[in-house]
Length: 127
Image 1 (cartoon, rainbow, N blue to C red):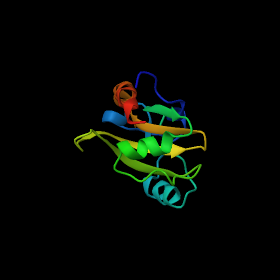
Image 2: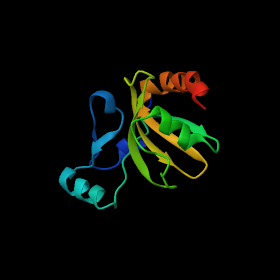
Image 3: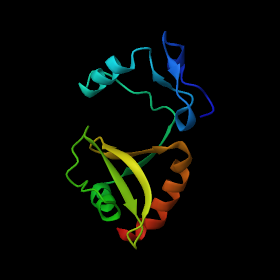
Image 4: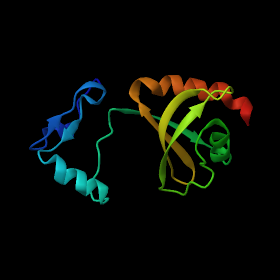
């Protein structure tokens, strides 16, 4: 990440290391924060991640043909994880996926966003 998250200026913020550098790993109370996250009452700064969007009426069925996950039933606001597979069934990318009813958002490591977009463009023949 080239620009640190503004949330790092929040009191108690502890910067993460490695691939997550530039965002906070926690804000001083990691166990309490973990419980809040598990309860659905917390958010995670993912500004250091890459995002690739897929739109169109066939986006979920198309992604379903390319992935290990059944995503055709993904409802707006739901999220899941998936592995995108080559035609030989080999793992090409792993992503978090969320759909808003018109666009599907694939969340990956920042360095994987451009290669994923390129790979998806090559897979358009699968429509």
